[in-house]
Length: 321
Image (cartoon, rainbow, N blue to C red; front, side):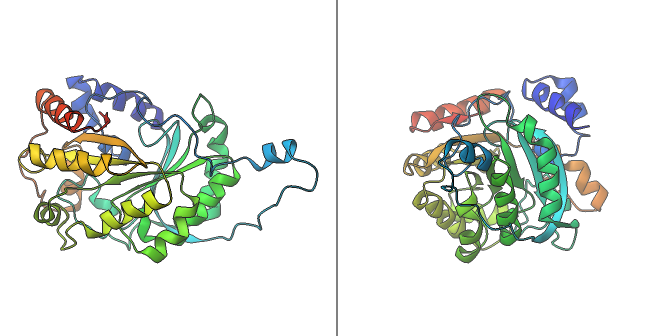
């Protein structure tokens, strides 16, 4: 299933109309985040973050007695929605994706409404997640870029202790760590997992306060995600801004210029990942018996997407598409 999902995802990005229709029936979160025209692993930063290390390699190269071995990693429990064993579009290198259950927002374009309720999912030990990562580790480490685990959701940052434990386990395996987040949570929670975070993918929804509240169905006005970005900047954690391109909502020149300014004003930001809105999660709303909030809104066409990319680049941003 995962191998077929990856093939469909790449072909869907290439614009194959048959695959675009078939992809509707594939329900993984990363498929639901299909990116339009970008393919393969190109675009993400190609260096492993210095936080990631191999204990075994360090032990071989260091003088005897010089290695400090961390205490055993404490077990934590959290709610997991699902897994995808292999992805190349959710952070640098090949990555395993763990989708956590629960979210504080009700985004209009959410392709995974089944991950919203905090009461759902499977109660899971961080040790069980580590076992899955250990089996995949030889494949995740292949290639020029060291891969690893990306935690997505739902919103992973609302389970900070669980995230921290998984990231510690990943580092012990010599893997890199990445969080796919909307910048939710609190400073206390961020302090738990950011010391063990190598990369972040931050979906900002909109830079306009009213539009942000409309999309997320909250009254946050984007304040929390901006604080989270400042935390990433302060800690020099490389991150990418994810911007969902929605016709009539987030595609104006003013909006795109502000997104570019947010990116270029932070040295830790590696660029903007432009995500054309899609309807691949529509079937989940039907299965849940929920009304789809965006009605008949259609994805932006290739010309509109390229125009948005050009606007971001004109404003100085590096764009992944």
